[in-house]
Image (cartoon, rainbow over all chains, first blue to last red; front, side, top):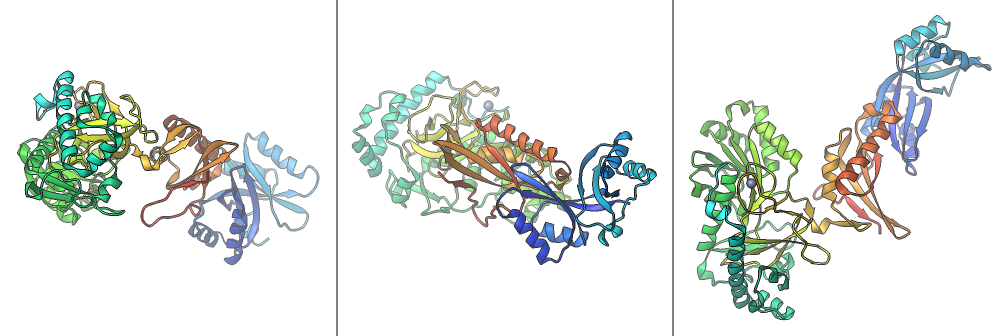
Length: 143
Length: 430
Ligand SMILES: [Zn+2]
């Protein structure tokens, strides 16, 4: 039902991001999806990876502060208003979105959007009821 | 709350000052006549022992430093012939030559008296069984405490340091009620005791800890773990060893044995004497040492003098917890900042690791301080606001303690340098 995301803390200093992406490359870890949010001082990378367990092991062993958590991966029609209808559905049910980012890859005419909402179970139920397909970990990794 | 020597410890302040002046004159005279270093320094400054007419005149006497002691290693500061010396101790000397201390018979008696006062203030009585977990070596700690506790009438277990499991079994079997150790070793012992499951069979009354600086947080933790009162005491090989000052049950500063030591606080940069209550470097003059008198010795320890009367009834002034070493002091926008102050704040913060780095920079003639701390609590990665709040919380806490704005940077644990010996945490780029 939910997709596992890794959040990694990264300070905003020259070369830190390059160091991080090199670590993933050297360990043969594939990024399925990625977003970086930052302030002037630090950033948080949020990513879905091809092999979550391995990625988590490699990342924490390299000394990064990282955490796993569940997010919703929703299939949204790749057309004007596609994202809006999903956001409206969640909003109408009183579910607040903490952040969202879009998928690097997708299949066909639908886009995949990652949602982090406060009430995951409720969010998933509301979306599925409205006809939105929620992807599983397996589905996401096979994209 | 027992007092070992009421006459001395509760002495009227005017009477005490008169006594201090009398002893100071004698000490300066002896040092001038018998120790070449002091004579040269005073001659150079144009001061003679006759110039000491009041206690304030002490400021005319030049300071003595650790370097002076090193240069006159081993016995250049002895004021009596070796025939009259009955004991020699030395500091460990992690950098450079060790510092030596020579004692006459009378010095040892005075030392025992100083410790008897400190240990009584810390809760020890003739009914106690005191375990001395300091190494019985050249180091002043074990022998200093030993003879003072013996003077009180404690049953002493001279177990020395190391072999923690054996220490704990002895504590259990002999019924130790007073522990003498460094705070860090006492903490380690508590951890081992809990692991061994013997803590319930150990009934400590008081922990009298010293020989290294510690924080109030560590004291609270030690009191909780051992279930007893923990007091701290102060001393240094250069002056005597332990026994210069010690806390009473009120645990609000260490009472100075003022009839034996004259304490001043100076500005570490200008050398100017600061008024009571202001923070600066502690300077000590011995008032009754025969074997090796000290004139205005710069301890490099940063503290302030507390003059308010103590609830315990002792009239002696107290020195506050040592907050740092003057060698480590940074001057940021005119404010004296000690890395130890910053460390004490960081240690109380949740979510960050124990390692940190301080960077000092200067832009447009203004100094800036940045502290890098490691974010270790991954739970904070869920929300940006959690991280920003953590950052703000640290900035506020630092401002309260240090008095200036310090930039706080969160970094990942892999970023900061790791040290195998003494950590070098300050990078001054000015
Ligand atoms: Zn007191």
